[in-house]
Image (cartoon, rainbow, N blue to C red; front, top):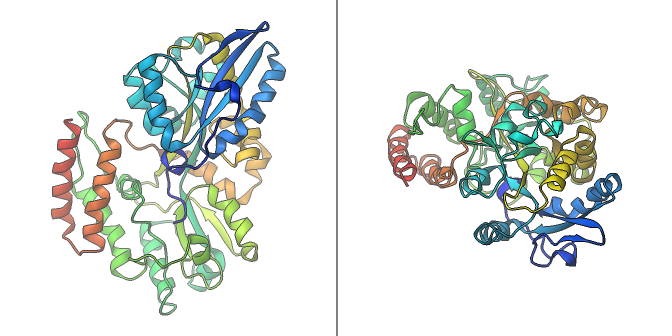
Length: 416
């Protein structure tokens, strides 16, 4: 796929340079001319739009100047480590959901729990349960959900109807059946794109099958029957020819349009704009739907949070900014600017979302979405899984034996 699932939280971006030169080393400058200067670190493409919405905050708070520094995702991690070591950094910072455990354990993120009474916009009950999970570390709330993304099924309505499906597949069996029928259209055509490089895909399907990923003591459960069955199910799409094993030399939109070489795929909300912009000829021929169900239809949840730096000298102003960004109306404006989906549940009552046929499925799926385990070792475990899965779908390795080996490796990783 053109864009992998956790792109907004982890993928490298080429955005660089300081948005405002006053930020320089990115540290809080303190007060000047009777105003407090608040430094905010944002990451990736969306940080380009932060100064615009910060202007709205400044209008409401004329004694606070907000200086935004945009960091490329591939440099942000090292810069954060430097800030933690020196105890000199921003006042507010964007946190990819998978970074929370590492920086919270280093004592870099302020516990927001005691401040909810003064800033009710930060109250966890305002947000989707899954997104709140990503803000927790031990018994602390070290961030507030900012924007979210989850995964749904994109499908060609015209081609599915020709295959006998007037609606999107609703179960695992229907998804496989529809994909096989679409692949039967002829040589060079497939039923679905299964992105083998997407590290969350199999874990998401395993949860749909009722599998636990980790036990109570974070012991791996990757070789147990329900997990193995889910991997077997995904591999069946490659085995039957419903999904291509090799790169086709085209991006997902090229595969989706025209004859629909790839008429179904699973991805996030960013694809809506890309399809509308790049394939306007598909208008009326595609849609989105919640994921098909086995025991449940749990999807993966990603996005970004906002945290307050533990060593900020402007705690009150930082909390005020975080609260402003958490308001439903602010998050709707942010969506208009960046296409990022709001984390505040109240935002989803707005007609701009309820009346949009494509976003509606995301709102429904958010009710049943979970983040990957919020532990420091998860990234290494996920990368290790991809190597095992490649041996299965490409090399024909025995699923149970490969999952036994993966489970053992994961146990070693978790002991680090």
